[in-house]
Structures are given as C-alpha cells and as structure tokens.
Figure 1: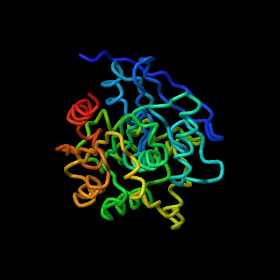
Figure 2 (figure 1 turned 60 degrees about the vertical axis):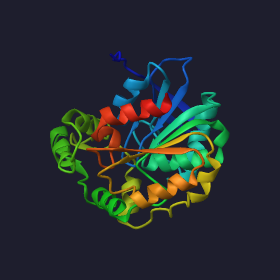
Figure 3 (figure 1 turned 90 degrees about the vertical axis):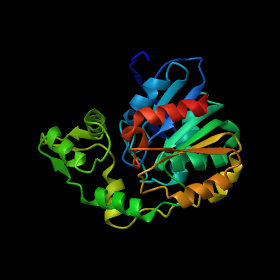
Length: 279
C-alpha cells in the first residue's frame, strides 16, 4: 500500500520568473517532472504523484500564470516561453536527465521541450494531446473559459458551477481542482487564481498562434508513451495514430471511463498504465 506523503511547497527563480512547485521527496530516486494543462496546477497531479513518489523524485510544477507561480511579466504565454521556463527550472534544480509527463497544454510543452532537448529526457509521457488538436475539444475549452463567471459568492458556488461540466471525476478530485484554481477576492467573493489575461486572450481573439509540433517529434528518440482517454474530444484517434508513426520509440495506451482529464477521470487505470511504462 502506498504511503500517503505530503509534498513540500517550494519556489525557484527560472527564466526571470518565480515558479512554484511541489516536491514529493524521494531525493536520490530518478526525477519525474509533471506539467499540467491550460487550467490546471501542480496539485492536479496529487493522486499520480502520491502513487509514484516512492520510486521517483516527483516534482509537480505550477507553470507561469497558474497556481502560485508568477504571471508572465510580458504577457507571453507561448509554447516557447513555457519551454524556456522548463529549461530554466531544470538548470536551477540541476536536472540533467529526467522523465517528463505533460497533460494537454503541458503535453504540448513537453513535446516541444523534448524536441529541443532530447538528450535530457529519460522518458516522455504525453497525456491526451497531440500536435494537432481536435476542434471539438479546443472549441469546448475556449467556450468554457470565455463564459465562466468572473466571481462566485462562495467556494461551494464555484464548485457547483465547475462540477456541472464534469463527467467522470470523483467529487474529491473536483473539489481539489477548484480549490487550487480559485482564491478569495478582496470583496470576500471567490474568483480565479490564474492570470486573467489567459481568459481575455480567448475572449478577444488574441491567443498566439500554435507552434507546429510535428517537426519536434522525430527528435524525441527516448521511450515515449501516449495516454489517451477513450472519451476524449482533444486527441483524435487519427492524430494519435500519426504520432505513433512519427515518434521513433513510442507506445500508446487508452484509458476507459476517461475524457480529456484522463488522470483525474480514472486515476487508478492511468496510474497502472504509467507504472507499467515507467517500469
């Protein structure tokens, strides 16, 4: 039975920003770096980290603009900026070779990082995302971000609103998701913790164009695993198959009872699949 440990909350200066991360201990074990998605945070990975932290030194990062990390000083939320943050984070912690796991936006950042620094990756886990996004899911997420209320009267109201969009995750997972995505506002209400510029870019059509990540994939020669939710609307079966023919050393697993939020929707099967790949 996995020992329930609590991570240490730490910060580091990287690429000109203060980045917050959760350090799950196990110093001396192989490092495993986890990067969340567009609306996620370091605590998104708590179940996964707790299950892996006996065998790996797990580090879960709040990417710029989320959680307790700095917002982008220049409003730069491009893939290149996130990759530069990851490189700075690794340099600050002396991570020379490690396993990288990324979900959604974090998975895209992980692919871009791996394409630029393949020698640093022991293994790569890409969670429910590809170089090309299914328009159904990307439009759904954009619509959700644009339409969400600015503030709520209480945490319970925020939770109730977000839980309406939930298909598979447990109540405890959804409460954790909302807990670390929100903060108390000066007026006593509850609002969002992430940089609201991320939302406004979607409202006013100023989201930076996406990088073409297909050229990065052939550079990633270490073992890679694609994890796809069977009910996803982000990673189409066609794109997943194209990734299988483009990445040099890759396998794929599909997780049932899971949409795009694979590791929150079905943590048990996700963790079992990842453990099988990591060995």
